[in-house]
Length: 123
Image (cartoon, rainbow, N blue to C red; front, side):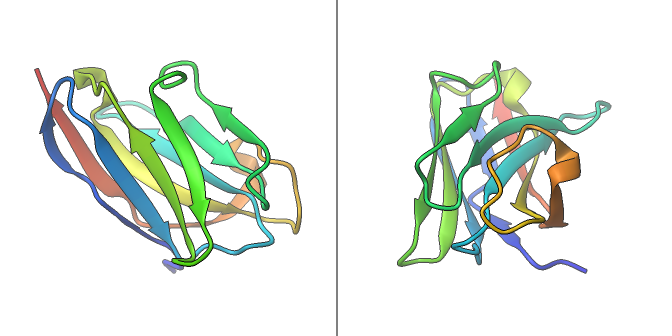
């Protein structure tokens, strides 16, 4: 069952920016973003702690992406800049399985997932 909803994906050109959003977010749970490129397995993108004080980024997006929480909107957003063709993937939002758990790079630490939003970056 789908309990999270991602939005903001689309078709963009290399160098463009895009902001993805995931809702609803649980204020007491760490949230993460993963992606699955065509023909590849799902990989870690970014994660944020329950209170937003700790963030983690995958090496491929570090320095050009920002994950944040918007408690007013009850969402977790992923701002991506300087997009590259290799960023093309289905992006998934996930919620951690335990309250106040530290953010993790591992898929095994998340048990609630959205159905994904497609991001396509043309060269």
